[in-house]
Length: 90
Image (tube, rainbow, N blue to C red; front, side):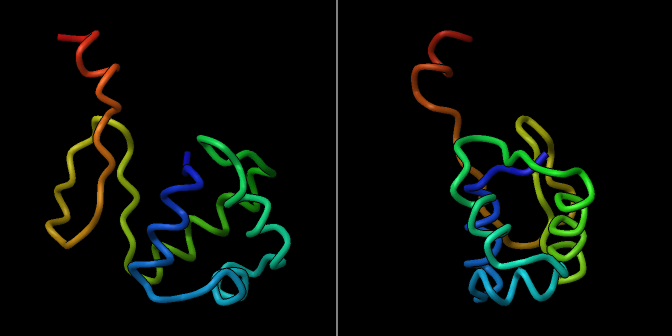
């Protein structure tokens, strides 16, 4: 899975715009725009999601899932859990 926020953050790390991501992934610009406009996890055709994730991978982006370690050791970003979720699990 990939979230819309991860897509935007990954593009920012790469310094590319939506059009460039669409070209790297071999999908249309409206598809990228629609994916990034999603709330939470991006929904779409599995083949399209795979193309985007693979494009990020080729460009050097590692997508980190919730609660997953990041053993790659490169720079990156990770969102903290919302405060309410953290306090309810403590």
